[in-house]
Length: 305
Image (cartoon, rainbow, N blue to C red):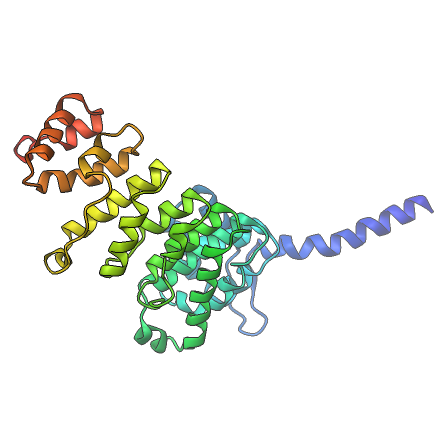
């Protein structure tokens, strides 16, 4: 009896294992009679991070089966499907399926889904949505999901950061919902910093918020305001709407040891563009005492190949 019970349990378990294994092998569609490529190639391409191969597999698998893969309980398959979606020409047809994964309790799945939404909406506009017959309500819901995730204090930081970046990427379709000023007062300095770095150059309101944020207690947030103000200074809009001066001059932020190297490197363009002799002196100091990266970037243009 014991052997019979064991055999029965094994047979029952195989009922659930075999279909999954079969899905990994080539099979024929019962309706069309056409050969369906296996999904293992998509999974392998995602594991290797091979973008070109991901695109090829996604095109061979097609939108319908990728939609099923996005909803699959197999986590690695769902992640692979999310990675492949942006490479499809008809990727907007999967917007609804990707949205279904954005609220996942799995932080990695949620983050990947939110980033995929940004990739889907980043180069889209109402005309493109109409061309693919994607209801405007679906796009609006995507913007609401991104906004809620970015502001969700209970969500993991990486999930919120992904939502913030995607809101910035989807600025055309999410205009009016991508007000980052509230997030510039968030309890997390990482969120405050990210909100500043994705601010659109939209005039006096943004500039006023940057001026206030330049007094933040976190050095990383303050450095981000320097980057954002530098971008404002270099933008064509600066001729009509001059940006305010930061609480600390940009040269001080560039020279500060607490300023991230990538921020200092971006602010160098404003120092180089300045006619203030004190800024020129700061550039000279960087050429002699700065980090190797900043020393090289601070060289006069004629010194660069």
